[in-house]
Image (cartoon, rainbow, N blue to C red; front, side, top):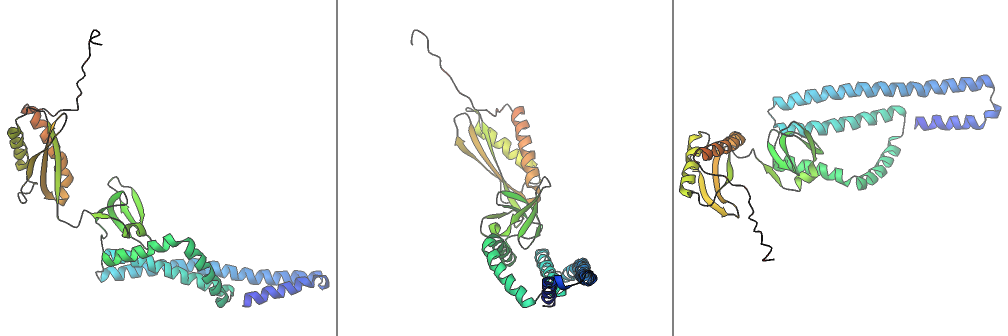
Length: 292
């Protein structure tokens, strides 16, 4: 309110400009520039000091939550929320220093909030999605997930986004709204995973021999679990191959190593044992000219 009074007094003075002498006019300008300049300078100082304080408080809160053995997922979400609340408090403090009437500011803020709420419905949905993720816990920090066509390890769960790190070290931000309302595959929840291969062999191949070789390869790999027992069956009679299905269970951490290693062993062993892995073929019959 004080700031508005100052502005009104300036308007009155400017309206009576013709009655003011040059020395009085210069003195008036210097007084007001100095007054408002001092307030602006104070606001700048408050802003930078406030940011330092917010950073320090975030550090204290983080240590406090970690010291109480809170789940890292909850800590990440609360830190993001607290940072936004403290920043809002800082902005309100700066507005008070400027002398803007809080009631007028709140009324304006409410009007702007309604407009922004309609324009930013997606952002509000992401906030609600973050709360739902925190409550129902479909994943937590450190889990390896597949969601929204992206997969990687969860680095942090923020108010509006979930941050994941991909296997090739890319950082991806996924909106929480989409995560909370769509399918999420969590590869970390279970301690074991099933590895699956489909291997094609030539027609005429001794199936029992091929099955015996595949069983030997799986038994030789100590990372393949005996319980559940590996499964091998004739899957499909394709146009160019007889497809054999192989399924085996491994510890979650061994999944890709076993997958690639068994692929390599099958290729080498089949070559040594004279079993051919075919590729798609097409037989073309050419008609004689006399027949045409």
